[in-house]
Image 1 (cartoon, rainbow, N blue to C red):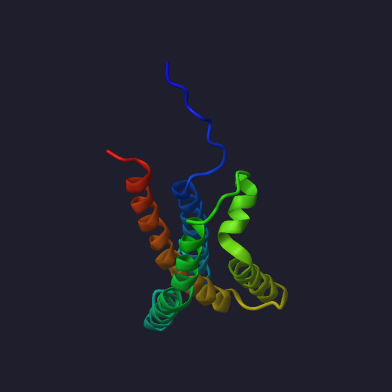
Image 2 (cartoon, rainbow, N blue to C red):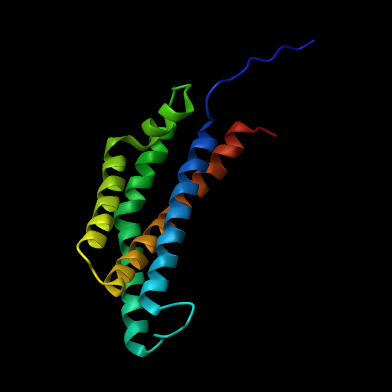
Length: 157
């Protein structure tokens, strides 16, 4: 009879799935809200050249932000996942992201709350949400790719 040791904690792949899911869900939510605020979906009220042009610029800025800033953040988190030893899943998630990433997340949330409190128009907030949502969706691909590579390492054929 074989005995198996019970392994407590999350695998590297599970950590990466959690990070990817968070970034994907938040990015999709922000992008959706941005589209609603900017284009007044679902009514398609503002599909004129001005709105389409500024929406495309916001999308482009978001993709550049994702490539230049959030890709580096995602790569740092992916590297940190390889060194995690914490058996407590909640603590390991905070260790996975690290202080810089958590500070970045809190700063982005603070800016969003500040814009709302300051009474920033829905349209301007919509453009910002489009940019940030696109950036998060762009960079979450790195987590998904890394989790696929980890599954090949953790589950030998």
